[in-house]
Length: 439
Image 1 (cartoon, rainbow, N blue to C red):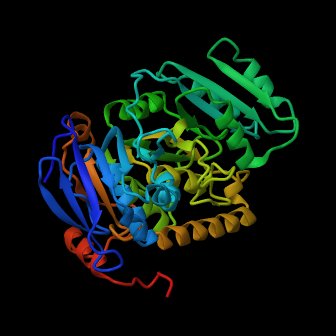
Image 2: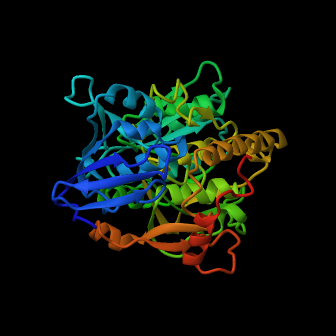
């Protein structure tokens, strides 16, 4: 049962058997109805539903089932569409679901709305949005090549924001030598902020609708930003756009791929956000890319009082220490989908001065990634997709039709089991308790 996205429908969700067989009745205003097993998929196309009306029984679901059902609600809602709570205990139900609604990217309705609930993000109105290329800098050695690649971007409009966390003047001098070549704002930190706080300051300084982080030793291809922004403009429901990247050395010479930089896809795809995050988190392998690789939307990092405290780079309220990129990607990918381009649109530099060469930093990253994995598993976000498979659509098909079919695609950069994708999903979902789950 599907509906074209241009004619959104209204859907009622009612729990059939709280704490029993875990099913939800799904009915439309036209009288059609279906049964949904909690943890499964709502029987509607992406963006096909204008209004979801839910009863108090949803608050009796387990946390895992609340998260999965809210993910499905967000998926099927049209841009700006609403999930309304309409029974006598609506206020209490909203309080019980608030954290998980925030996690998946639903926005609270105002307190004076006729019914409490949430709405999906509206469609982006601007076909030519301002992009902020933000450079959290501390090492001048490679900075000139880095900022020159930002200046050379073909996308307009852009601004370049440099947050200088070094204890010398070399970076400032390189910026000032380029005055007039682009819209560049330079901030010198009077006290060193260090990596995470400097990233947070960059985000605060950014005025653009979209943010492109660029580490001061990395390099962008000239059409990197244009390609990634075009994906957001053409494909609804994206919260991340990324690509394969090239590994280079301290002299900008190509290096062989390491496991994380091996191509994960062999063609341009739109990838289901949870399946992409699941693959990288469960393998502990960041094939999505370093912060320099991807483009994100600033609003998806707005602080959420139900979940974030004052930590932007966190997942489910936990700071992922030592792995800012894992924290960023996990946060946005439970809110929407990703575009993944096969072409190498950025260059990631490997050299002895970077943090990844420090054993203490590496150990802190391992601890942070394990904490992220623990949250991911406890919330049951691993349950729908084996971590070697992506839920994907061909990019051009997705850009031309919201109804382009989803297919299963292997992650090419991880070991692949000798089992057909469909059989792998069936076996994965049939497993009642995986070995990595807590007892």
